[in-house]
Length: 433
Image (tube, rainbow, N blue to C red):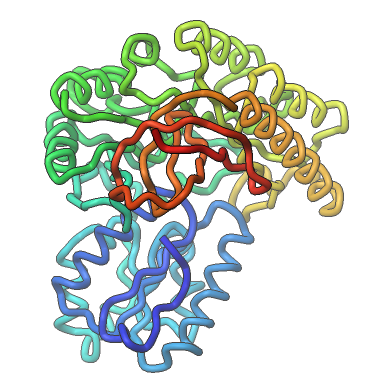
């Protein structure tokens, strides 16, 4: 999703501005359908993120920019930041309505807003206790503005309490979508022409703990692949590697339709920092997982989230995070400079100087760039299958971008290609076969 404001030519159509994660992007598509069905014309919905204090600041800036550019529009604010701090956004003069993370997924919310926007002030803030939510309903969408892939939410919420993270208070307890409903939606999307499906959630590897029989994520993946044999590609959005179950490891090893790319929630490479983060793994666990997954699936590629400059982190501790990039063989890094989030234990810990936090984040990003360059360079001469994302660009099974001469291939098509080199923009160059 884009955070650009649409032109005045489309001003009567509900506009969604998405900040934050892919799950937010998925939910924005659901909200857009609800808003259109409710007839919420000339309305802008800002779907916020709360992962850092900076994310909340950006949400406020976005809202004010929307009001300047759309002075007559109704502005509805939702998402994690709105769920956690509804009063903050309700106090903004630019905001007409604030709705919570549970309410934003309910068609009734938008119907009520459509009927009573101008007359019922009780509709201004609709944010209930997210911790009371016990189910995640499956919502049918046809992708995220592209024919390349579609996303299916299978889990929401989180029962863990990492000391740096406010998200459980925005998303509520962990809750899963039953396998039968997930399979039905995947089948529907495949029948609609999608070649690649991404299963997504907040804490994916906790999948099933709230369902009868406690099925695992690995079992869900296996069932999707078994019962939708026409599905060409399946991806997982992100996993907590220490909670990967034996069935997931089996499908990694045996199922070529599960793409050979996993994004891991590592956060740090030093054991003491991991303990202070209240993570569930140690350094050795992450290294062991990557080695085992690579043994089972030679050529598998890993990405990871890493936080730079966590409170009390010494230079030696930070070096452990740099080193784990090599020891796990990470290719794609998503680096967060630590930002104290009000309401979390980490915000009360001794903080590092902001300049040092930013410097360490830059060093981690440079390390990630070097690892990506090394991976891309090794692909020259390889023949692979890419899924066309847009004219002249596709993505490999390992999630690398490849550029090639425009060929008129349909978006979402799977085509054979040969890697000829690497571009200055860290993309593979290739030719379609």
